[in-house]
Length: 417
Image (cartoon, rainbow, N blue to C red; front, side, top):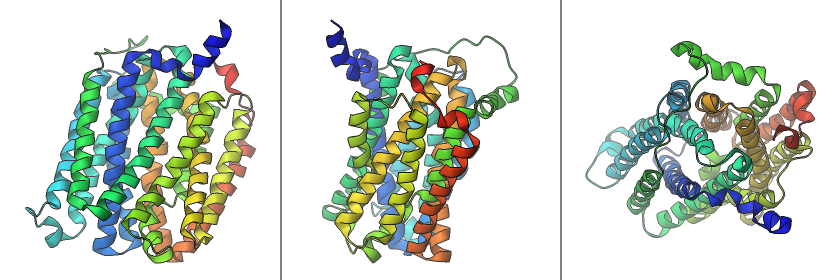
């Protein structure tokens, strides 16, 4: 009997039918969004051929994301979370429709204003992501029981990375063989599909609070909770700084054309490689989750991620670069899964939206601000030195976090369940 239970444990979250709808909705949304980000990066590179312009894509999304996330987290704790996801997804669909319109031949916005209209649309997607990220996180414990949260968090991360592999790769292939208009059409269709799957999830209502707080006190509660919890704060800070300095994704269009000399298809594969490595690692983590010595595992994997970035900057071979990026994704996914489990197990139900918003401000915005940092560093230092610098900074940051956060260093996830 126990052996049957153990065999089913890696898929225990899928016993809940609504979790399947949740997973399908997230998969379709991330797949469509990743396709869109990939197309936008290539389009801006074609328009400007400037690393700083690629970095500005991240800044255009980070500014509204950071501004809206605290309010979105508060709203996710006082309004039905399904409704928030539906409305935010509709807004994201509108932004995707505008990108499609810009490239359809019926608009002269790009001809007249260059990349500026694209930045405006990315600003819109930043607003949508500010609501979608915290709410997807917050609604998960309303779909699966607490004992299945680690498994659900692992599979949610796995599905994210599967979509993150398929999105850039598909976008690169469609760009190369069919064209930009069809690429945006596919992205729009996938976002629409995610909306349909969310509609299949029943209304969840609002988690009852034990105390009544003012609006601004409620907004600050999530930040106070994160700051006072050394493990949560250290894990988020580590991820924030590692992604801020260590990521090279925003510069991949230039690596693809100027360093590795591959076209749209090669660029799509480069964008997909980290997520492919993350999928492989996620399969390992589903059967052997990082519980004992999770803190040490987290720290060493972030060190390995930084080393991978340095190696990628030095590589001149396309296939070696693909392998290094895949390896970086595998190491990064360990960090993502451990952080996700820490947050899900540490956060009270009535605060999930606000804590998820803080997590989004730390992590979600760090990708976009990291893209801007990459663009500025590449402009000032040169493309390859800037990525090497970022990898070295990542390794140094791990040393600082390990020294000043003994609780994270000694973390054992088994004791939190």
